[in-house]
Length: 355
Image 1 (cartoon, rainbow, N blue to C red):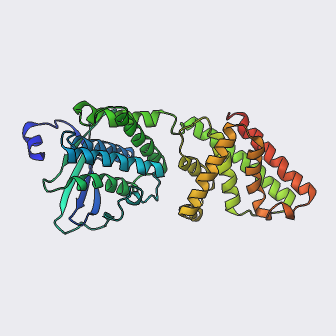
Image 2 (image 1 turned 90 degrees about the vertical axis):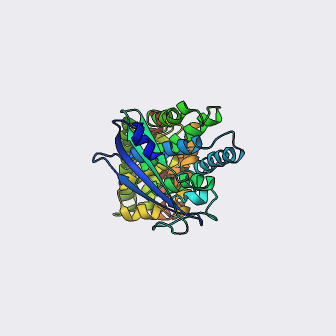
């Protein structure tokens, strides 16, 4: 197909942006490497490559062929499963897609009858992209389906947190379009669905607009200042463990984000983490059990904020205000009052302009 495109000029005057080389074999081992073709390539192009490749693999699944139709059904369900788990920087995509027992990621190209798939993203205009794929004839349908998961997994090494959030929302938008009846085999939808899914993700409420991001950061800074002042004046603490400050920042960010109902918990956690700018602590947060705990904290806080449960919000704030002193049993009456008063001030300041 690559030869025909060159022969008939099917890709005239398009600017090549990014290519992914996916090599797999009989044992379903997958290696993925990227070629950046443009000096001003931006990270979101990795997101768009995934979206267009997902659409292209679905498009290649002929709905009149029972086997290929089943492959398309399986691929959409895999994406759904991955989204249910949430795509994070440290996600194991093959595990979340429930294929880690048959497929593995490898660094070097596998050698047991290898198949090489090349997907290239082109710039059309500021809104639109075009994708070309070279897929060998000896690639099984399963190879093509699994290659989408491999591409997502490899791209996580390239993407930052904001782009990962866009990826989550964009894939969700694509599946909604397919589930609503839009045909993946329609030539027009091949480009339209990933384009609109991406534009909706970057323009919709799923991300913090810059002004909202700064609003949340301001609330975090104010709460941190109040808490540090209380810890210093009331408890004579010169230093406070970073877990207490991060937990407090996460609760405040979750309260302040309630006007963005589709924002991911990962984005809330990330904006709280940025405030502290501590690399060792960021590594600590990558532990699965820590990340899951923080996601639950964000969900619980947002639920309380949406229902205006001030008592619950104060309780959550006090959990982290008390962390440096070991709990309420170690406090005098005046110290306990200081914690309660601090939590009330932080809660009132944050929730007043968030709800």
